[in-house]
Length: 487
Image (cartoon, rainbow, N blue to C red; front, side):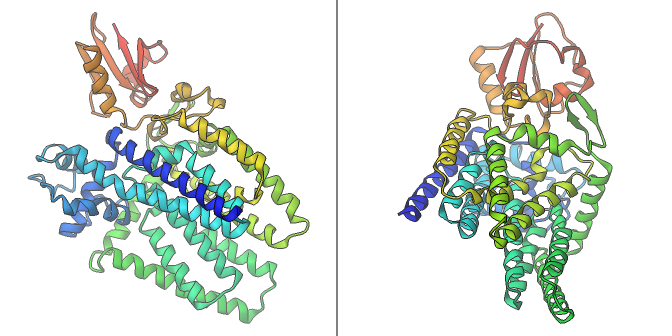
């Protein structure tokens, strides 16, 4: 009875999530990186030009651009301009006779599907570990998370990486439980998929190494057993490399290492970042913990804390629960710690893979009616955030309306509101207006009597040109992340 009810509710939650993703795919404007990913993927399919946008591996771009093969869009006249990816990708989407909304919508559909698959994986893994009640708790946390909803339809690699990391760690966990050559190869293949999803998947290698060593010590493996497991792990590495080589069509695999080099340079050199009123080009070591605290719903953090208490209580009589919990939490913690070494602090999405691990762990609570009622409250609370999920901040931050004082960029204002800005200008017939919103405008802006300024939170908080109005109350807020000033 409980199994059937759990499956029914899981299907309802997943269908609702997909519906919201499709709706946001229509209403949200293009965010910062989407045009580049989409254009790159289309080039990979049609010209095998892997030189373009090689700072990110190709899998997500392959998937996003696949529907475009049936649309057959026009290519820009200078489409081989690898030195200026923003210009060429903008020309592809907006200046080549294509329908921008059509390209973005269909490019986002594979991402909505990936987000749906991740939900299925979270439910299935949690139900496998903790039972169907646990699976439903994990899925509810996932579906009701504004960060997931806000990014789940965008043409970026964060959701795909989260899926690949979860599956890789799950397949590795199965290998540790019963090492076989088959499980080693499967783990290697999934590990390879993670590597061609996003370069930050490299974090999986130290996580796996640490977990393997701890497992060997705890179970007091003999020398023969250790050598056998290491040999199997070597097979996993070979399988992983095979996936990478095939993803680049063999001949172009050199672009993987070029992209990896660019990624490492970006992570070590940094990026213009904003946190709690400060700006920096090298970031802060505590950036991700701070963003996690303010961007995660309070109810979710309470449920995870309750799960920790349950894990401790169960540990006194269930050795299996101890090992599983330690592996899941340890993996999440390691991913967070390694990510904290990066100086490119431009969004909590960079630790997105931590969330599915925590959601699966929370399933340890099992069939608890009180937790189910709390999660129902979370779902209602999340619904109230529609459609501004990307900008969500919790009550500790003062709510979404106050979030721009804590973090911007992909945490708050990433270009998703351009359509809403245009609609607002038309509806209110605003004249003499300057729009500074992810468009490279505003460098020479000066307030003049009778003029209006519409500006996004990212530019407002990071560009010194607008220092004089940063603390001024806006005349209106078009969305939580877009401000209107009249002079």
